[in-house]
Amino acid sequence: MDNKIRIRNKKAYYEYTILEKIIAGIQLKGTEIKSLRQGKANLTDAFCNFVKGELFVYKMHIAEYDYGTHYNHEAKRERKLLLTKRELKRLSTKVREKGFTIVPTFLFINEKGLAKLEIALAKGKNVHDKRESIKDKDLKRDMDRRNYE
Image (tube, rainbow, N blue to C red; front, side):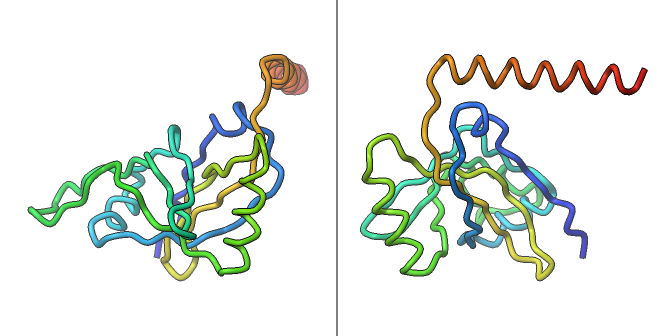
């Protein structure tokens, strides 16, 4: 089985300071996993939220399956994340604190063929923090260029 599906949310690393990462299962429909195996997903605008003690991911775009019939899925529906009760309770108490949120950072298929989503407990960056991130990124790029020359 080809497990080379690795979809990153680069915007999350720019917008937030990542504090802690957790791997969660994700509840998908039949055509969603088929489309995901083709690499047709986008995490850019996605976010996580609690509803009645369960964690859901919103605005995660999984394109409709090309060969799907009328049973095809919606591209941007909410999807339930599969975590233990202990993890859910710990995350919900952290999110209630001011400034913390949960963002999806990485979507992949594991060696068993199951779709997994890496979520991160994050805190929003200020404008000056974002400028610092851009400056560090530019410096690293310049250093890499000089090493290759």
